[in-house]
Length: 504
Image (cartoon, rainbow, N blue to C red; front, side, top):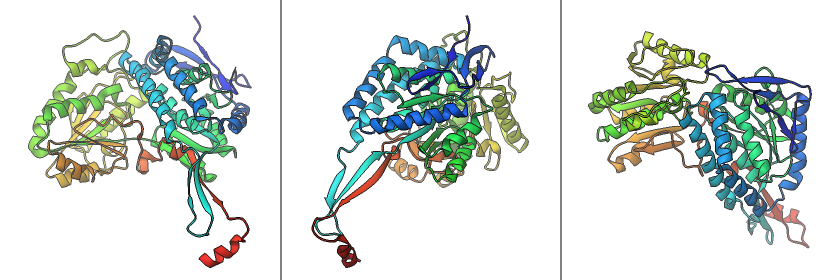
């Protein structure tokens, strides 16, 4: 049976690339050919932008009910067995995800779509009107209006829910989108387009293109440069995020960039150590650490360091990464059963993870769990201590199943170590003193701080947002995908310039 073909979707139509270009999609673990994707040309990218621009003229004026009906229908469709199977199969085949992670893709997608639909009430009907403070008799109306064509880029690690998030907020706000898929997971991403087409989204509101790894940089730059593109959103690595920000800056175009993470967890002496250890390991190892909010740095007060370290090491040793197919057998341990670890996305990624561990060890760190080796793209869980700022394992996102654990002699030192990072997406704090928790959490520089919980969590309506640097900036929200515009209605019968001069 031939592998599935993934077309482009432009102006509501399935089309091949204009020059016939394609690229193969392989399972990263088995290297089996699992798809053939169209590879867009410059002409295709331009056509997608023009289609989105044409559709914007009507979609920006669509009613709340029209948008709500499409989103509600899409939610119902996504909950069906048909789409559950589509998501599960595509994610497993394209990204070598374990069945548990594939199920997470589907379940998180349903939650993402359902919760976004409720945010339609955040759009201001008619804006806010109030009297002018400067001109007697004038009224001021502040409105939030759709921006235009939004260029969206999404990664492979949680392909379906992150693709949904990339397009949902722009479309909800009355914008239209051109979405460029990851070359790793075009089939998983294309499911999102198929879903909305079946839900009745008008042609041109959502345009889907895929590009090969070789043509992606050039075509991405061309799309960003196009004058009809108003804003860019990107989720992915800080390295690529910087390149996109540079291209956008050439044309002074705004971006929403959700980039890397190096999430710290602070453990105070009065914490529930057993629960903290379980949550830390789960947050660090789920999907082999391939989440931007994975737990990467554990900072623990010295009085409970030995206890926490030993419990983390015991749990980590009980977990084994292996071939995700066939499905791994059940185990007696609840945490072990939940940690169904497969390979990381590529051998080069695995080698980078091992290199970071090796460099840290050569600089004085100690490896408590793990052999510091890889088997192709499989990396076993590692626990490393005596890691310090300045080491790459401390400073850079590993995107792998690695837990760094260090001791701190005081709360002040723990906070300083947590903040000794260019990343700021998520953090956690464990303590039984909730008064102290409020004080300490306010001093951790992070978009999220979870008290007595894991770093792999966020309240969807607020999203995950970096505070600049390697975690990026901007937010997936109604405010970020609308323009605030001000309309001043001057009084009739009197020249307004006189009022300006008087108020000055």
